Image (cartoon, rainbow, N blue to C red; front, side, top):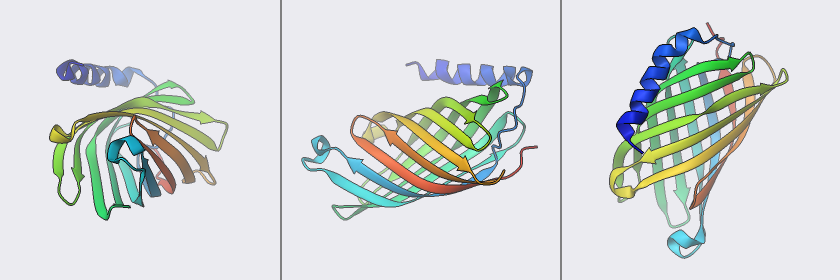
Length: 192
């Protein structure tokens, strides 16, 4: 895929986004998660598990533009700590009063005991409401980390809102080599 063309498409869509209606999803939030990763046997010759915590957050600058951050810290079976970080900008626009499209581009970093690689990430997907309290989010996630290689994964998260601001999250991210599970809580600040 031509990376310059994809970036140009995101910028063009962002410029057109004011024509879309805002539907009230909050893109200013904080979320904390328990994270568990299961790496397939094909990668290391044996199944490897890791667990730890994750933090996510976003700040909306306008009804359609937000900055986001995602961080995880996990300890794996073979005594290795792995930290991942992603920081970037996102565009969200309404398809209806219950569904948004999301596009994001960001800086990515993976830091393990012997490896520290930087690169970039792209996310594209949707966010939708099912009823008053339940929300689904689905994203395709591309990360290119130089020498580590690139990776495409698919993320699905469900959120149940106890109040307008507080929700619990349950999700999974799957690629060809690993599955990541998360359970967490999100606090969303009111949209402007």
